[in-house]
Length: 250
Image 1 (cartoon, helix red, strand yellow):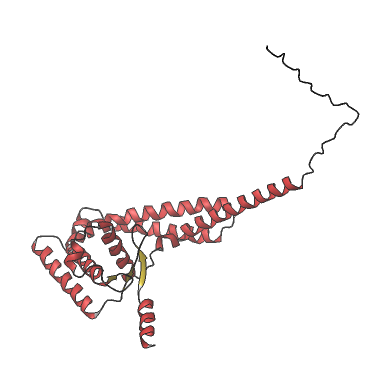
Image 2 (cartoon, helix red, strand yellow):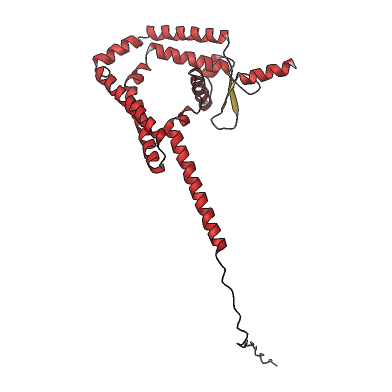
C-alpha cells in the first residue's frame, strides 16, 4: 500500500510534456538539493570563465547601451506607452461580443504584443550576451540534464556532459524550454492562453458552430420539401417495340 502511495505522490510532483515528434511523454521531476548545488556551482564556473574571457557584465552592458542611446528615457517612455495601449485593448477585447469586431481587435492585440516584444529586444537582445545570462543559461542546461525523466523515472541524461553531447537537438531544446517555463511558473501552453489567442479560438468555434447549424437547417428544409408525384397516363397506348428478324443466310 505504501508503494502505491509513493507512486501517486511521485506522479503528482512531476510535470509532463511531449517530445518534439509527439510520440513520447517526458517528465520534469522536482530538483534535489544536490541538483541545485550543482547548478549553482556550474553558474559560478561559467560566470568566472566568461569574465576572464572579456565578456561584459550586465552592468557594463547597460552603460554601453545608455551611452549609445539604445536605451534611456525615450526607450522607457515608448515601452510604457506600448504596455498601456496593450492593457487597454485587452480590457476592451474581453468586453466585446460582436464576432467581427472581436476578431479585428484580437488581431490588433496580437500585433501590438509582437511590437512590444520587438521593442524590448533592444534591451533583452544585448543583455543575453552578458556574463550573467550566459552563466544562467548554463545553470538551466545543468538542471535540464538532471531533472528530465522518462515515464518510468529513469533519467534521459545521466550527466551534464551527456546533455551537451546529445545528438537529438530537437529533444534537448524542447526539454530546456520546458524546464525554463517550469522554473518561471508558466504552463507549456502559456502562449495559447493569452487573451487574443483565447478570443480567436472562441471566434473559430463560433464560426464552425454557425456553419454546422446552417448546414443542418438546409438539410432539414430539403427533407421537408414536397416531392413531385409521377403521373401515368393510362389512356395513352404504350407502343410495343417489334424487332425485325434478320434474314437467315443459307
